[in-house]
Length: 236
Image: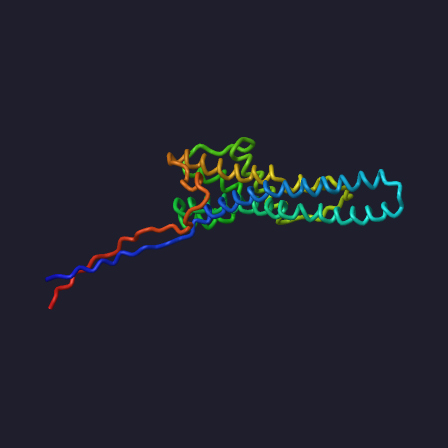
């Protein structure tokens, strides 16, 4: 009798691109939900401001002033969930784009080529690799490259934030939030840019887009069966 030993084994790796994209999508949902709290705080501040303006009683006016001060603080605080969600969306969208293009590059480039590729800025990676592999090139100024560039700029603006001051005029919001992309629309744009880039790249490759683009949750562990050697041993 002979006994067969099979040295196959399973490896696992982390699908950072899928993980980051789903984190982006969840952040966009949080930003959307935060809009309701901001609207409520803004309406409360506006109501108190109107009451104070119409007030003719000194005592009542003092009480309204105190309430308005508290409402102003709560108005600022109501933006916190939105700001946190928007920062997360931009950073995670950039992370998704970087992880995805790096994964493809590692499979397609030599170790020496990949070492140089890793040092490139994110938008340059998305320009260079498709061209290097003989696919249609992503064109600057056109989608999806335009969206990738916007994600990179927003991520960098947050990572290298330069302090900016302007008057606080409630119940509006500071203009620098728009410039930094700290709005629900901007967060949604970053998510859509990542999806468009991955979808277009898959099309260039002749592949279906990653399945996890169409789901909201999955396992982020990627398994691969490594076929090893087979040995036979005679029984004694």
